[in-house]
Amino acid sequence: RCHKPVGYINLNNNDTGVVRDTEPPLAGSRFPESFARAIYRAAEPARPAPADSARPIAWLLGPGKDGSPFLTIPAHKVLTPASEAERAETMSQIRDRVVLIGIDLTQIDSFRTPMTLLTDRKMRGVVVHAQTVAQMLDGRALDNLDSRQALYFLAGLAAVGVVLSWLLWRRSNFLSLGVAAAVLVA
Image 1 (spheres, helix red, strand yellow):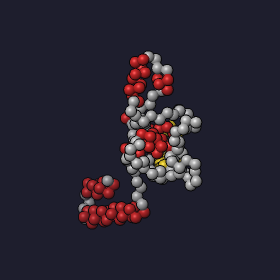
Image 2: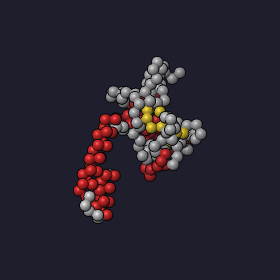
Image 3: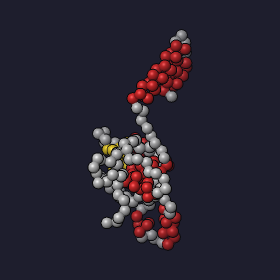
Image 4: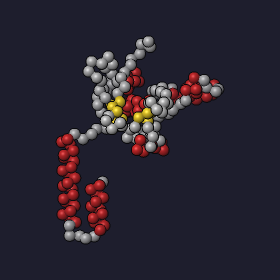
């Protein structure tokens, strides 16, 4: 045993098969804290950790829309570097950073995420966990509208549509209709 805190895997692979949200702990589980929260608490012991709850993951996009904004270093560069210079470079890249170690199993540890639409590929489990840890460390949140907020939003959108149609109803100018449609879409 390593005598370090462990946590449950808090990915909600919902009925669509797409990981969009984190999961709260199961009632009575021997793991009351998620893996991401345990990592957060180790990285930021002075700051209170966000509660484990069901919430959308606020995805980060990598450079070139590759789906991974995180540095990836092959294990051999850490375990058996080719030279002392390579060891020093690798250590400087990971010094004072949160490091997650994972494996690249394409058939087992790959998940469809909302990012799959951009990258056209599944995301490795360790990258999904890195996304949730980064979200906690950055203090980012992505919230869905509740039913009351959605009702207000749709009522406001309908009101804008009524006002625009009233202002432009006599005009047969295609440009005016195009601008009205663009305003509604925006």
